Structure formats: structure tokens, C-alpha cells
Length: 256
Image (cartoon, rainbow, N blue to C red; front, side, top):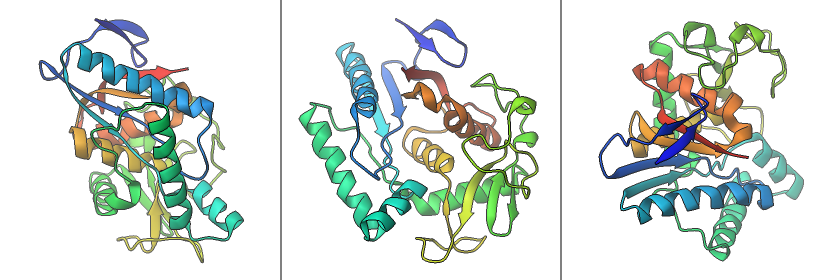
């Protein structure tokens, strides 16, 4: 069987890391609202991928995260006048109900970001010890200039990246492409204790922690919407490469 690998931009023969087994990770929802038809397409797409490999006789381990702490969730909690956890719980249940109604099989593992906070903090600390992260006033950033492989997934060169790509300019960063691993908390925001003070994790770090925890340092397929190739999947892969010298996944699969 051949699959299109977004990293190499070619169709490749699928060869699992372990014969007869598939380890698959696909990005799940950020639970600040009900998901729409475009979100549903991605969830259904990777459910079909999972089912097809099972049909072929593979022993499939499928992990899908739930992002239950994020800027959008905090904004929604303010809008609805409720605690962020109440907002997250409400839309997690709505997501699960809708998936059931669509006939989507439950993943093998479906962790929430807030349940993996100790592992997230440990990963960021390890990146800092290895020289790939730096702290500025309670915020921790990934140093993209310290990783020669940065941009290898998306094909983007670090010099080509503009200040303000999905985030506002921050003159405290060494380079505009450096991305947030840990955010210092603002008054009234949900936060957790860390070596850098009270704060919360960046989105890119949440996913790499959860995928590695359930599937290992390198797994077979990482999936998601094509809009996630950059910066999200690029930044996930960068953290994995910095930690182990190995890519996060062997094949990258994206739906339109």
C-alpha cells in the first residue's frame, strides 16, 4: 500500500515500524465551541484510515488529543461568564456526542492537555537543558535557530518566515520564528506552577507530549488538516527532533 507523505511530497510504500502494527496520531479538537463540518471531515477521515488498517489486519493504536486549555477557550469562558474548565467540559461532551452520532469509533487513547501538565513541564525543561529553549520574563520559547532541521516538514526556510505568522510580534524573542512553549499567566487566567512561574503550555507542546507519551518517540503516522502543517506540525516535529534526534513520525498525512 502506498500513502502520500506530506514531508517528502511523494507517494511512498507504507512500511510500519513494527510488522503488523500501526501507531497513528491525529490532532483532535480545541474545545471552545461546537465543531463544524470542516472539523468533522478531518475526524471522519482519520477514522476511515484507522478502520482500513484494521480491515487489513493491523493492530492499530490510535491516539487523538483534546486541547482543553487555549486562548480561545479562555476567551469563550469570558464571553459566557463561566470558568474555563466548565467551558471545556461542555464542549468536550458535545464533541464526544457528535462523534458518536457520526459513527466515529473512539480512539484507543484520547488524552486532555490539562491531564498531562507534569509531562508538558518536564518536556519543556528538557528542551531548556539541551539548549533548545530559553526563558524571557516567565515565557519560554523554542530556539528555532538551534535546530538545523527546522522547516524540514513544511519546506519553509527560517529566513523566509515573517514576524506575526499567527502570533503578534514579540521583540523578546531571538527570532520571529521562535514559538511559545510556556506562557506566563495573566491576572485571572488559569495557570499551573512551573520552574518559570505560574503559566500554561503552548499548543504545539501539548500535542508533542501526548503523542510521544502514548505512541513513543517516533510512530508511524501523524495526521491532521492540511492547515496544520505549518506552524503546528512543524513545531511539534522540531521539539521531537531536538529531544531525541528522531522525527516525530515516519509518515505525515494531511486531509484537505
